[in-house]
Image (tube, rainbow, N blue to C red; front, side, top):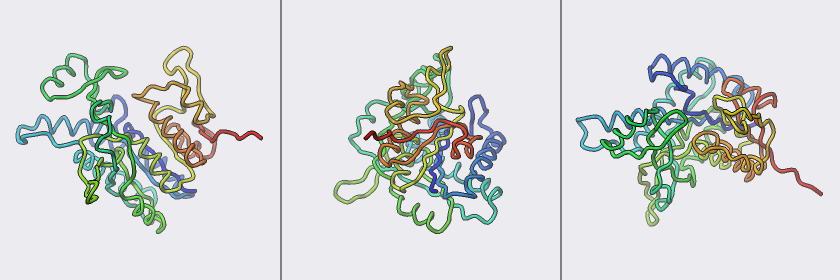
Length: 307
């Protein structure tokens, strides 16, 4: 079975973690352990988030007195792909000795006229108190928005239209490699309408929507979205909270899940299942093997046909 695994951005820096190398290593070891059991039985493609990492890089670039202007988000995204890809490769080499493993810097096509460029919504980087966030926004020209526990920078997040390296990823899978790609949603690029030349876009693409598109283009059998909760919940965080263990695209879309957290994950799962007729699931990183075998998580399946 071919499985595309989408790791949340908190796989390397969980909520409350300090952005230290030792902390990243502990978390990356958890990822390698969770993935290894599946990789022994299936073809695996790993994508990953980068919101904590790209936010930190953007903050450092904006504060660097040596540079005349901050580094654009597409290049910061490329840096996070290299950073996280390298960490994953090293950890997986230890847990899967003898397995071919490749981390591929990947570009995601977006439309230059996507209205998302005029309406930044993608949360990146640390959470700040309101007064600190407002001060940073004034000094650095940021857009900010309220998060669950504070305020964060928000950036443009255009919709993914295609993965430039899909054919290369397919070739790597054919030769038996485990592939790490499309990190942080992929490096956003636009294509010149006349020449096809690629140009970087100052944005961050949603990694779950990119994972769904990648899984579709690769004809994957299963899209596995891993996060830090055991499954999808309705009314999460309230006294009415209830687990969703089995769902269809329609029931997920009627769930009203928030854009800043579970919303993109449920939409990505719904799109993949609708477009392919295959299965998707959402659940906790440490239960990855159990989720694929139907013993944990929220399973998303096609609508049952009647008649």
